[in-house]
Amino acid sequence: MIKKTQTRTLLLVDDDEALLARLAQAMELRGYVVSAARSSAEACAVIDQVRPDYAVIDLRLGDGNGLDVIAHLRAVHPEAHAIVLTGYGNIPTAVTAIKLGAVDYLTKPVDADEVDAALQATATTKSPVPNSIMPPDDAQLQHILSFLEANDGQLSPTARQLGMHRRTLQRILRRNGIPPSQ
Image 1: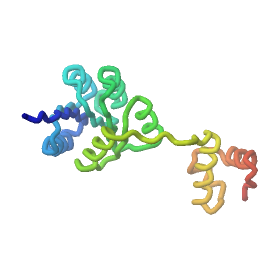
Image 2: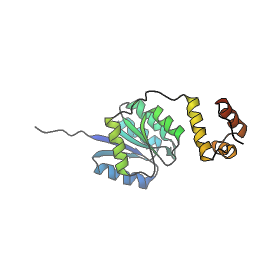
Image 3: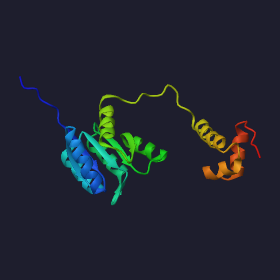
Image 4: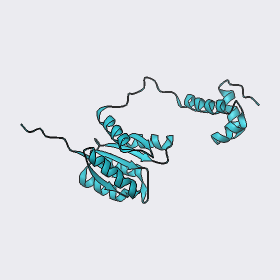
């Protein structure tokens, strides 16, 4: 009896040609059948034609946004596992990417072992749903308090780092029963 091996198709999308070539070669050595795209338009065309099982998509592309590619992949092949790869990691974009259907978010520089591990983890496991979700106001307060602690309780530098007016910071602290220091 001949055992059939499962083909793992992978779409790599990045406008950095050197990175794209190196990562494609490394992922082929790990058993993936790789398609590469250098733009969002090229990536969408590959998605329509190949319907890859996996995708590693750069967030910033020369002709658009990697989030658009994720949305297109999700519409064409909802079972595909997409990972966002970017040099500009931040929480709002990570949240948006996950909402659009990405299953992981990696920041550059990244090596092929990290990408492969993330792809394999997304194929076999789902992130656990938290038992309780922190309300947004509590999350905001925790964020503010971490900055306040890092600034030794000083309001002015904390407000600057948070991008808010000092009086706004004082009102938020007062509203939460935390006496603001001078």
